[in-house]
Length: 333
Image (tube, rainbow, N blue to C red; front, side):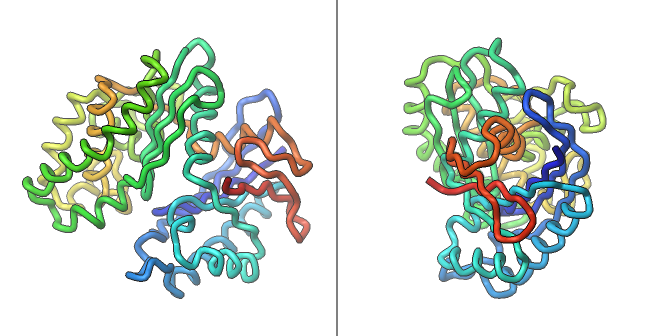
């Protein structure tokens, strides 16, 4: 079965095409991205602007066409925090449905966390024991812990790298004082979530997922993506602290020249590093293992587990849309 996953995030729109069937490792066939930066198109009133909605419609329509020409029998299209939090979310979704012909579904923060955790569990397996996962997105930070495929604790916090860059680090490069204030604020914000996660016990394995963690690990000396997904990659707190001292003195343009940092991610990599550092400090983690699978893979795995037919499992409602493209719809709880 060839599946397409269309992920509308705060920073990018990403189409992943895979060949997959139940009980097998999903095989990536193609990956297409567009740095839409949807969260930056939101006005002071919390609404996605007409121009932002227009760009979203055009991008979704283009990527849906790519999925069709790639031979996808099914397109799973979903959106996360930027669309989820927009004051005009319903209007934007209706516009995408009418003009692009795609039923774009909104994923709740908790469901986002749970599906990412499923992907991490499948990657590392049962022998990993209790897993603690940290996932940094553009708009939110997801924290999960548990010993099964469904986490015992799943949290979604408004501590994304893009969000904190816009709210805290407007200078380029940011001042040393501003970084210190943000560090203190993050410590306060993460104190209660850390206590909730600690109630699940000491994890056997701490994991970092998302492009932010992969970029940070690469900057700290981990193997490049060309080495393949199965190469072990880790990020230590000590290495992260040294990295922050280095990249926080650079401009976004200079950071974009570093290996592992793309031009669209360079403005927010400092905030991402500070979020990662604060999370590891709050959770008393000296290092995290980097997992190449995250939300998109979790959605694919859940789709393969449940099949079509309108079931609702872990926030995923599976159904058929109005045209001839079958769509797995992700619904908020």
